[in-house]
Picture 1 (tube, rainbow, N blue to C red):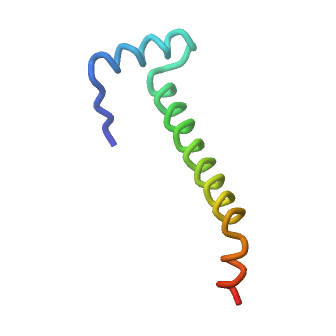
Picture 2 (picture 1 turned 60 degrees about the horizontal axis):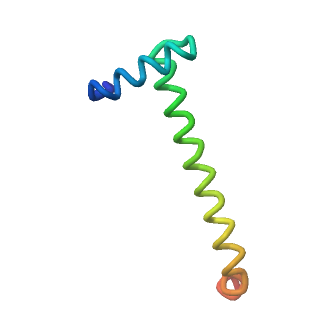
Amino acid sequence: MNLRLSSKQSEALRKAAKQDGISMHEAALAAIDSYTSRREKRLREAIALVAKEDKELLKRLAQ
């Protein structure tokens, strides 16, 4: 996969990586990991909310 960044994004990534003492590659991977883990958490929370709010309906449908 190739990741194409705008010059502004590339510069921001370069500066952030330099401040953290890591490569731009490592910084990009960390950002991807953070994004994907937040998505999974939001999905689990949404499923739990539906299960709680629709508990009785889900119970009837299961019968």
